[in-house]
Picture 1 (spheres, rainbow, N blue to C red):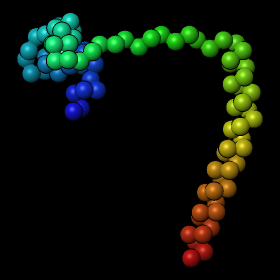
Picture 2: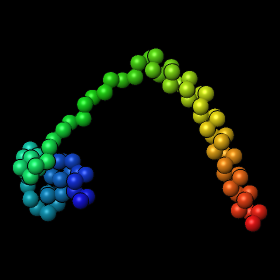
Picture 3: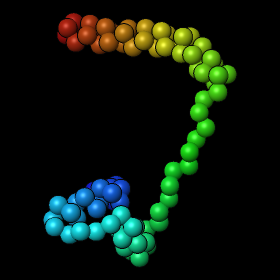
Picture 4: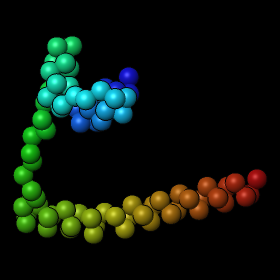
Amino acid sequence: MEWLLNTTKQMKHKWEEVGVNVCDRTVRNRLKEMGFQYRKAKRKPALTPKHKRTRLQWAKESVPRYLHQKINQNYSVRFCVFAV
């Protein structure tokens, strides 16, 4: 089932490795015949300056707290392991 995660270009290159010359469009057509659907990811808009400011503000407020909690958890686990 690993082949399900490949792109058409990756599949084309795998076919070329075994000596079969095939184009991307042919691979897509065969996949379509097998019932697979081709979807191109929709392009998302870039972050606006307002979004960037709010993300940065959140990171400055949240990340130090998160890291502090993570460090405390690691030390308590080590303490318990060595205390036994």
